[in-house]
Length: 320
Length: 320
Image (cartoon, rainbow over all chains, first blue to last red; front, top):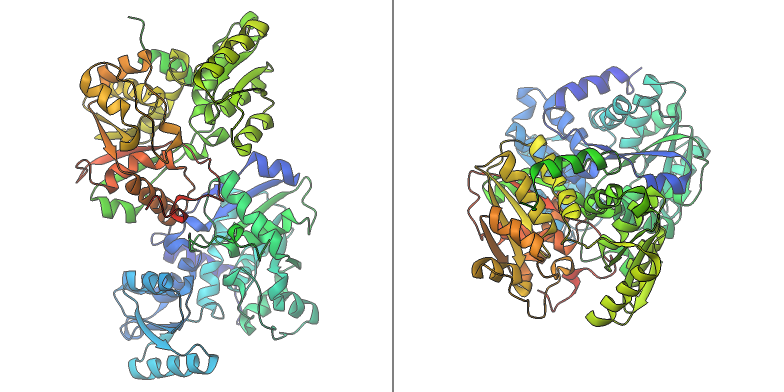
């Protein structure tokens, strides 16, 4: 038994809790009324670095021995995990080496640099990324912290559900987005072990439905080219995340692009909070009526709030 | 002595507290670091109807005798006060008559209708608005609830500062935007009577600086045509609000349009909250370094979060 466990998640929480935000759980009478059920939004958009990724990266960095730590950490990511790893490394006073494609948006590069991350650019191909990462690790001795397929990271991400169930113990259901499965595996492992009767439903964009198809096939099915505005959910499942998803997740549903945009806009307009498209995916399942929440108490994890405010999806006529 | 007092504000709070949200006070290490002082944001964008106006309107409606109440309330407003009055009237089960110009944005009309407000349209002139309001009041017996120049409304608005100082008692300074002066007179009266040593600084867009000029002249100076993105702050002072402002406010500073937009965008990007332009005006004084906050503990009232998400100021090249 080498998988993720509730004790690992509890230990992660004790390790990181003074290094992250205890994010609030917000409600909206308007959105609850529309849904016909009670909705409890866990606001990881208010997390450090603006996303739940701060949890897993911080846990991984602070689990290192001093000997390991002094050589630093490395990852290939252009998203929230890169910023989260850079921040965690800075907190520990060690280097973070981030491999990014040359076409990365300037805002994401700036976010990593703000936390002192050392960036290595590579061509925007999988092969170039892997060889650049291997080279950086060989040169520095830095340890890889994968964005999701890593038990330390998965345990850290599970701490959001731990807090959610502390604040709202009597949930019937948790909705969680799935990309690579780090948040989902942590959430499902935490929630099912704390409360075996709870339902865990993952939500995935229909335009990047590899987890949905893998879940049904009982094996990891490679994704086709992802086609979704929810850029945080384009990753494929890993073997470690998929094992916990098979064990604990009750169902995976998919949502359309218009539903994601509609859900995101409703969160902004009604709740007055900024969430990125990926963060609206779980609530989009409620908007699109992909499952029955009538009379239920539903936890919804809002994963992050980082996006380019110059490029909002409701201004893009292609999406709607 | 017929002005606003702390007991009136305390009574207002007892009257409305179960009918409004206790809004959170949020902080940001990033924004505090940039400012060089500790910033405490009172988030009235999370208030009912999305703005602090819910406080004053609710207080006014629930102060009516049953005989007065059954005839309803009336106002001329196309903004947050109209929605707030409609909601408060609905809570009490009485009619709200709202006079609006024919060119009001559809979203504002919809917001009033959502709460059951009865709309009377008039031509978009001051004369037409006043005659339409007088006619509605004569026909229905409804009582006018002015958006700000009304002690009941001013007392209600003062409850935000009451809560802010309950949550963060040791503030050195409160920054508050000023338009008609309802929020400012309530804030200043509450804060100075609770904590005589506190400084109250009002902030006004330079493009609608009638309060700034009135404060310096010692009498109400009529405004020129307001020219600011902060549409909630275009109103002129009233005699009741100005009396308290003269008594309690330490200073009024003005901010530029680019500073308002920059402040608004920083609140969205860093704090992940949706605020309307008027709500960013007080923080804009920090951004534009219009006063010294170094080492100080500063309360900042964020007034509301209602705006058209299709029309954001950083997309408007005229503004920046």
